Length: 331
Ligand code: AMP
Ligand code: TRP
Image 1 (cartoon, rainbow, N blue to C red):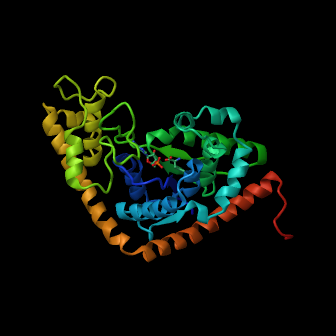
Image 2: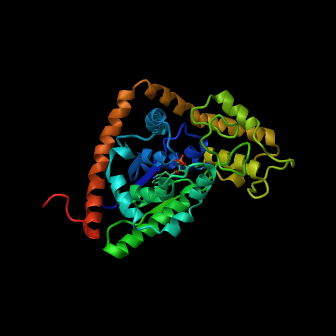
């Protein structure tokens, strides 16, 4: 594909998606499919690192695919598939594990956070970034649209690609991350020191499929501070700055310019809730339509996996040959 950049990104099928996923990543995914060769993946093998219930994992995988279609991923303009359907991901991941350093993995902040919070820490949770590098490098990816929390993983992926290329000769394209200027880090509405995450029952997280009244209520109750000045200053005013960041991202402005429009917290909260509901309501409608047609989702994913496999198989073959693995069957 000369001249057209390849874009790749992935999302875990771990329950419902939230506003952070949408503003930090998915909106860029939708935008990229128009001008680039976009490949998007529901990363169910990554979800296995924390041993989800099998029925839940199955349901969440299909729900994540339905959600991606609902936010506007168009299977005629991009490739959408489930990671475990393309076995090349797991196979290249082994080669990535043999290329990344133990010390490099140990420095990953996502691993530190997740392992601190879990009783059982799987080896897969530790080598998670190697599988992520495999996802990205299999598609000769130029650009990886993600939220800010993935910056470190993408930088490690670049280091892995460069090390492999030095060891074995030119094999992989070295990718770059793309992180939005507003919305890259949507914080929890109740605890703005933490990023918004997938505990949808929480008053601090806004689900993409949440009822509009509930969304409005959560914004109304969002934590601010004891001053009454609307100013964008994430260090000293994290709650207010989070609201400004969300409203800016939802309306395509900068948080600083949005701040100029408000003198009080009440109207800022109300307008942020309205802007978010405007963004979410068409997504909720499409999701309801799609959920009544699971056959269509399965068909889209099967076609996507076939397309993905063709690209992935060629890259894996190149990596195998360059690393000195003999052909699978005599040529
Ligand atoms: P995950 O849900 O962890 O698989 O993340 C999917 C995508 O959403 C990744 O690109 C993340 O960087 C992005 N993301 C997750 N949480 C947030 C957040 N609170 N703010 C912005 N982006 C996020
Ligand atoms: N680790 C990413 C997350 O938690 C998900 C992911 C897996 C991903 N493989 C990827 C993101 C490849 C970008 C590219 O959000």
